[in-house]
Length: 140
Image (cartoon, rainbow, N blue to C red; front, top):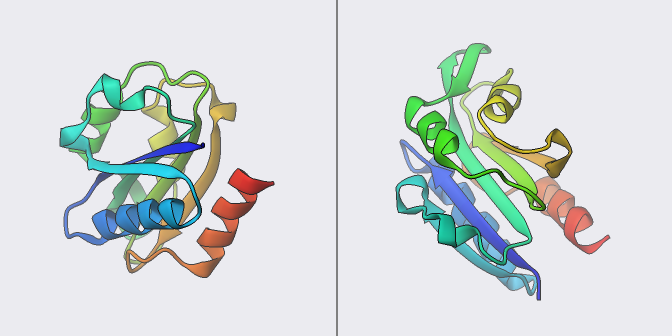
């Protein structure tokens, strides 16, 4: 059975909602899944998972100077090297994501090829488009 871990950092609840939607989608599609906030993370959480979903909200001015919030960056810095995990980044935003994913990538210790998908949501819901992207990654 495939296993996923969804880790989120949320300020208003939108990113938490997206993380829960991703978790529920995984469970509904036969993937063993767990969802946690960044402050609940332990290294043991990474054991025996195939897919790691990492999410935070888009912080910054409009489209310019967007970046992960400081607490997410500190969490990412504490992650062990993410070898042999397929990583999916996700974010919520008000206007646009700008350079958000590029900046999230900078904080992670992993082979850039391990980051296999980027998902975004304006309202915190998992869209049909994002469900199809996850489906094609996991089942094709």
